[in-house]
Amino acid sequence: MPKELMMVHIPHYFRCPISLDLMRDPVTLSTGQTYDRVSIEKWVADGNTTCPATMQQLQDFTLTPNHTLRRLIQDWCVANRSKGVERIPTPKQPVEPQRVKTLLQDASPSCSSRLIQLNALKTIRSLAKESEKNRILISQQGAVPVLISALFNSLEETREDGSPKEEPSQPGIEVWEEALKALVVLPLNDADRNAIAQPTRLALISVILARGSMELRINASSLVERLSSSEELKNKVGETTGMMEGLVRLVRESLYTRAVKVGVKALFSLCLCTSTKNSERAVMAGAAAALIEHLPEADKLDGAETLATLELLCKTLAGRTAVGGHALSVPALVRMVLKVSDQATECAAGTLLAICSSSRTVQEAAVQAGVFTQMLLLIQSDCTERAKRKAMEMLKLLRSSWSNDPCISEYGRTDVVPF
Image (cartoon, rainbow, N blue to C red; front, side):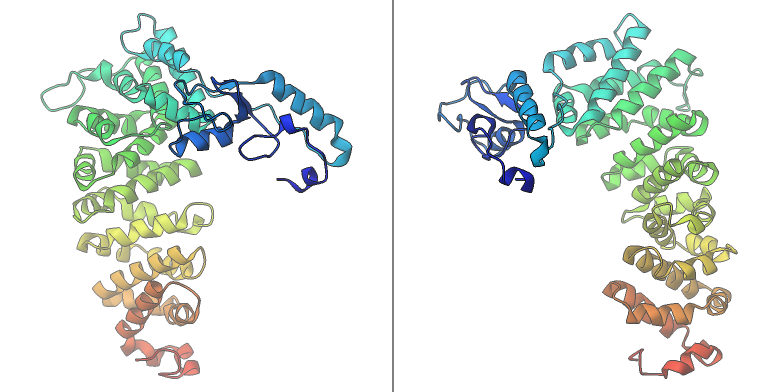
C-alpha cells in the first residue's frame, strides 16, 4: 500500500476483500461481490473456482466493471488530495470477446469490403497493443489464423519457381501492412509458425523484405525473428531465396535505429543454431560488413546482440575471413571490450579470439589496436568468467608478440596472467 494511504482512513467498501488495498479497477463477479481486477484475476489464475468472499462455486467468470464504485473512489481520492492521496486513473477495460469475434469476421479475406477489412485489422492491432490481457483474449478467439490468411491469401498461387504470379496491388499492400502489424504483436504458437513457414509464404516475406516500405520491412523482419523457434524452422527461413539478403540490406542501409535493431535480432535468431548453414548464408549476403559498420553506434543499438551475431558468423571459415578482413573490425572490436555491457565484452573477446586464430595479419592488427591492454583489464574486471577465459586464450595466442608491447612489461609475465 502506498505510504500516503497508510495515514488516511479508507472506507472499507473501497478496499478489495482479497488484498485489503484501495481498489483501482473494481469489477463485480456473478455473485455480486466486487474486487480489484488484479486481485481477482490472480485468484482465478491460481486455479480457484469460488468467490473469495462467499465461497460460492463460480459458473460464470465474467468480470463486470463497477463504474459507479470506481467513480466514487476517484471522487474520494480527489477529496483527500490535501492528505497526499493521488487520484487513480480511469483504467482501460479489456476488449469484449464478442467485439473481437465481430472484428475477426470483418478482417477475414472473405469480407466483401476492403475498407471494412482494413479498418478491422487496424482496430485489432490497436486493441492488442493496449494490454497483455487484450493480446491473450484476441489470440484465444483465433485471431492469428485469420491474420495469416489476410496476410497471405492474395498471393497463395505461385509460379513453378515459387515466386508470386503477379505483383501485389496497392490495396493488397495495405492489407499486408495492417495484417503484419497485428500479427507481430500477438503471441505465436508452434502451429502458427508452421502455418507461416510454408515455402510460398516465406517467399512472400522475402519479397516484402526486398521491395516493401520501411514499415513493411521492419514488421517482416520481426516476423522472421519470431519464426526462429526451432532448428527446422530456422533452416526453412534461412534457405528461402533472398531472405538473408533482405535482412542484411535492412541492417546495412537503414537510417532508422529501430530497423537496424529488428534486422540484427532476426539475423541473430537465424544464426543461433547447431548448424552453421545460416551463418554461412548470412556471410554470403554481406552480414559481416553490415554488422561491423554499426559497431561505432553500439551505445544506441543493442551492441551485445550485434557482437553476438558477429561471433556466430565467426564459427565459419568464411565468417572469420570476412570479419577479419574488414578494415574497421579489429579496432572496433578492441574498443568494444569493457564498453557496453558484460555480454557485449564477452562477445567482442570471443570474436577477436576467433579472427586472430585464423590469421597472423589480424593478430598484428589486434596488437597495434591495443588488444593486450584491453585483455589484461578484462581479466582484472568483474566481467563474466567466460569472457575472462576468452581473454586468457587471446593472450596465450599472442604470447610471441608480448615482448613487442610496452604494456606487458608493466605487469610482469605472471603477476596478472597465471600461465
